[in-house]
Every structure is written in C-alpha cells, then in structure tokens.
Image 1 (cartoon, rainbow, N blue to C red):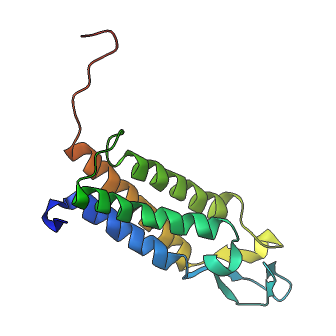
Image 2: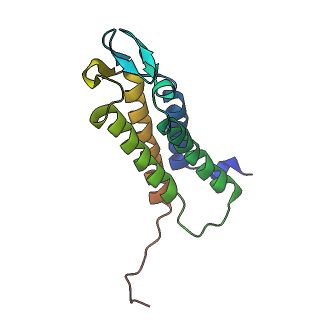
Length: 153
C-alpha cells in the first residue's frame, strides 16, 4: 500500500465523504410547534438528525460516504478496473446531492410540512455532497484519457 499515490482529488473526496458521514448525525430538521411530528418525534423546537428522521435515506447517505474511501483504497492498492476510476464516486455523489436536496427542499418529512424547517445539518450534508462530487471530478480530470469517436481506428 503506497499512500503517496493519493492525489488531491482523492483526498478532497475522502474529506467530503467523512463530512457527509458526520452530517447524517447533525440536526437536519427543527419542529415548529407542539403539533408537528416527524418519525415518531414531536414537540416545539425539537432538533432531529437525518439518522432520527429518515429511514432508508440515512443508510444510502452513509454508503455514499464510504464511496470515496473505496476509491482511495483502489488507488492506493493500484487495482485494475474495467471502468475509469472516479466515475462511480461521481455518480454516487450526484445521487447523494439529489437525495439531500429532495428531502430538504422538495419533499420535507413530517406533518404538517409547514412546521418542519431545515436545520444546519442539512446544509452541512449538502456541502459535503458537493465536496465529494468536486473531489471525484478532480480525480477524474487528472486521469482523463483521450477517447476516439466511434468508428475511428
């Protein structure tokens, strides 16, 4: 294992993944009044993390946080792959950003949805997803090969 093979892109992606893992346990939602409920929790001013309030997405976000660690492991061990390194991490990052955005802006959990507001943990998770994506893109741009168009020998 040669850690000197890790480049800037992998390090940025790993930092984004670690930040995303931490963000899952930070407060994402705040309940507005005593009638607001979210995944069995109720009460005015209650701060709930993604781990407390989201069921399946919390696991998906933690798996997304592991993706850059897998990329770094592949780079350090110099494993051959059948696909370009960093592409799967970029796809995972885009998926994580989409899930975070949807559950914070478009489809907020809890009832009534007007009494559930997003807290700082949601913003940290969104930034972590973007950092994860930037790291994957940096990694991919460092090792981009020139491809020929179809039909060219």
